[in-house]
Image 1 (spheres, rainbow, N blue to C red):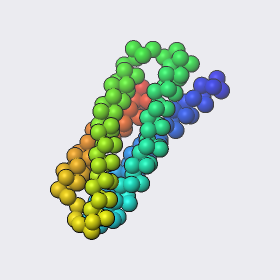
Image 2 (cartoon, rainbow, N blue to C red):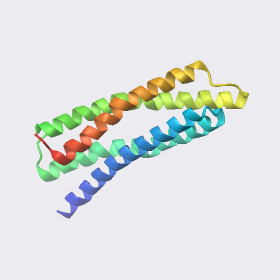
Image 3 (spheres, rainbow, N blue to C red):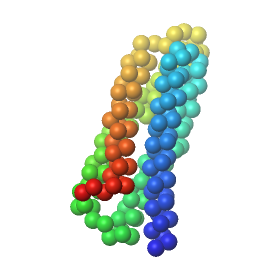
Length: 155
């Protein structure tokens, strides 16, 4: 029983990291973008890329591993509808998160170059930012729904 609670703790911790890092990254990128300060945007985007690689990626890897172990330890069937829905939403979240990672890297690079050249941000940056912003809603929304499904197990 102790193993089950340890794995469950790690699973919940992974969910917290995904949601916390995701909301923190979104907030800091949005605030940097709103500042229109190219140097600040470049520095913030650099930190965001590191945070996503360090925290979000490790939690994204941890979730299916700990989830699978929890299924085995609790004899939960993958056919349970709440779990099937959670896994489908996890895929949806990933389909929006992976492109966002590449957008953040490109936005960082564009902002760094603009800062080095003492130029304004190029139009491509703003296209990417709008896309990044829009992708955040279904990606983060799917993650929020997964958390609710994990807790409520409504069906």
